[in-house]
Image (cartoon, rainbow, N blue to C red):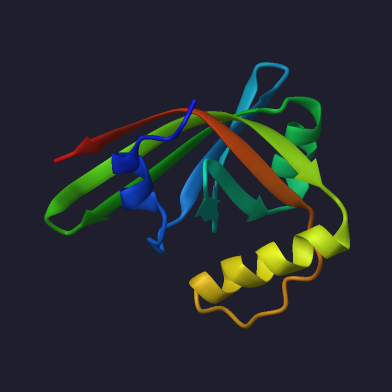
Length: 126
């Protein structure tokens, strides 16, 4: 499935966090991540429980919402399949782009890269 143009326009360059939902043994886990979107793939680096869950169950839900004190402007919901990448030569350039997008020069160390191939995506504009 290709990601609708409306969704791409909303999420491609925005500096918002995506909330990633994983689940193992019917125990859901939702956590924010900084992300990069490119041609139907949402990428982020992570560790901890999210990573452990993704290694066991590759099905992922993502949500991104833009809101301010006046209310919600738009929201996007996506479902996809995650692949965990452990090779440093693939992680480093994507991680650098993510941290550049969010104007961060902190050293987060080398964390695995997760690439989520988006299967379905919907947007609500308010």
